[in-house]
Image 1 (cartoon, rainbow, N blue to C red):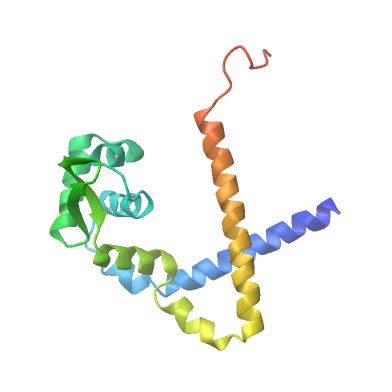
Image 2: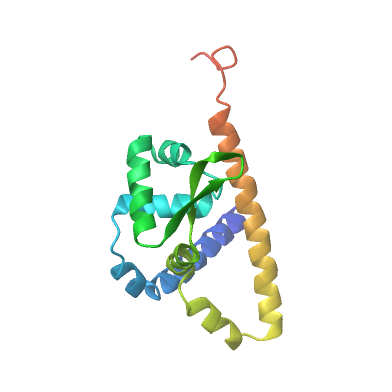
Length: 165
């Protein structure tokens, strides 16, 4: 039974990998046309993931200083991918947010561009329902796994509870 489950886990992971490779192929033009540094792309993805991040939090997440993070955000602002908006918690401060153009770029880069929406109409209703349910289950599993990993990283065992070799 365990060998069968392991084989099934490998098969699902391999199939997912094939799908992501197919979708990446659809975004090669978007990636090739980017006029951003790797550091700016990292900031773009942080802003997409952390909608309420301050400049300091962006820097902390990327392991860079606040002034460097501010400079990188400013470059995204200059090219129209991000904007500085008033912080609802502190009106004296501006926080970075993706613009609709920035959100669209992230969606295209990570989501396979137009390849997935173009492929879905080729499936019958039963396949669409099955895929939708499977994706919801996968999202829930990824969220649970991420929470567990984050919790473990944020709560390492203290010296008193660690086993002594």
